[in-house]
Amino acid sequence: MSSELNVPMGSPAPGVSERAPDGSGMDYRDWVRRSYLELVSSNHHSAQALSWRKLYLSRAKLKASSRTSALLSGFAMVAMVEVQLEVKFNYPPVLLIAFSVCTTVLVAVHLFALLISTCILPNVEAVSNIHNLNSVSESPHERMHYYIELAWGFSTALGILLFLAEVVLLCWMKFLPVDAGRVAATTVPTTTVPQNIGFQAALASTIIMVPVGVIFVLFTIHFYRSLVRHKTERHHEEIEELHKIKVQLDGHERGLQIV
Image (spheres, rainbow, N blue to C red):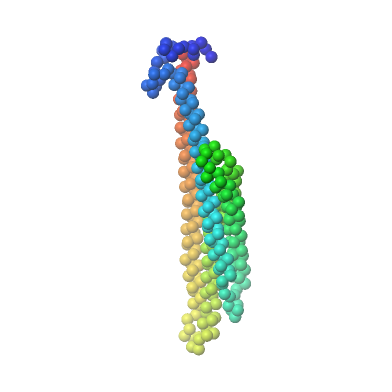
């Protein structure tokens, strides 16, 4: 460095103010040095705060996935076991196959999400309960980020869509044989018996559930787009703040070199 940097604090160089821009009694060089140290320490704490925020978010996602998956998979299993098929009614083969496949895929998807949550959540919980800022690096949430997002997507998006389809198929399984049982049990002529009651009930549930499914898909897309937009705006703001600080420090260093 040049010999001008060895000027004592009590005798500032010509053309350089004795006070720093913030009005303190230190000279320009000490103020730049202190600003740099504060910037480094603040970036360190900001990085730690961001890591802890990611840890808590991952833990919340894993807890929500485990609860949702256990609940919906249990309902699907109960529905498959408790449904009573009419032996005398000829179900459409497509309906039976669709109900079987939907139930199996629904339980498999939720159990897979539950498996991921059960394996990762204890490790995240163990680190989050330690009152040490540096312990966040011991958590596997960064390395297992894709698995956590996969469990979250299976449990909330795909799992709920399959559950809506399960409700529709279950309505068809329960209501479709109503007409055959009513006609066989009544002694009134068939001309006075209202026909297609079960079909109309199943069709009504389908008509109601289709807009619900469309609204759910649109809401999911809108929610994730809003979340990504929010994260992108936050990153742009942080980059702009860092750029302003860099420009300010570069200007101070340039002024010291001129002196």
